[in-house]
Image 1: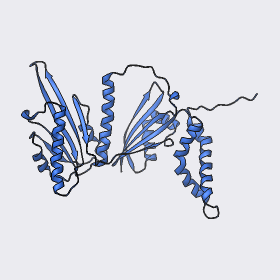
Image 2 (image 1 turned 180 degrees about the horizontal axis):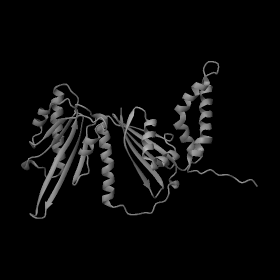
Image 3 (image 1 turned 135 degrees about the horizontal axis):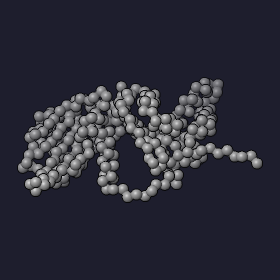
Image 4 (image 1 turned 90 degrees about the vertical axis):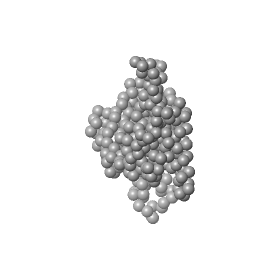
Length: 323
């Protein structure tokens, strides 16, 4: 009896090298040929264009039809001049995800994870909507004006923005574009037995407003700072965004106007193959080389590599800035 040779389902290299490429090429060729007579066009050139357009769709269909249980997927987030790239293992079926030992996740660990996700989202919103000439403001409180709690602090900011928008409407301008972050921290002094409250608001907004007028409209403190944003050639707005959204000691809440643009998110199965991902995890220089090759027009800034011991998957995060 002839011995059957099985392919490793988790290794998509065989699939990409053999069946998948043939499947995509034939499917693209046949579909284009149906609508374009050979005598009128150069089929070889045209079907390659069709192949590029169909590649992601056909890969997804192929994975489902042939039940490929694990591949690496790439997610890109374009936010203004900033580009973030995540490369991570993707499992088509829940049953294929390697079992993890169930361990209780501490409240603090989950809080840290949530903070990082929120920080990254805020950073992308800032990069997507603001740039040179816009404003970065810090609003503070006098001792006699300190809010009793976070709810009151948030209300102060909402009323402040209403006053700004009221004046903008009188000038025929739309509502202000903004993102603000409120930091609220109550500190206890063991020596004196007293508590003190530290609270302030970081705000990024469009630069159409007069800085002096904004400071007059904020009526709760006089140690405020307003400055024009000057983006960094290497990191764009990441430095400022990281500072104002840094991990808090106390409570933190952020709010944004509804008229902001959202970052563009795309996903791909074909950007990086498993073998490339494994090589990149061992060679930082290769990450930079391949990122530049895959994303022309962007300057490589930095990258981080993670390994999940439970699902045996590699995770790569890279950040780039438009040249």
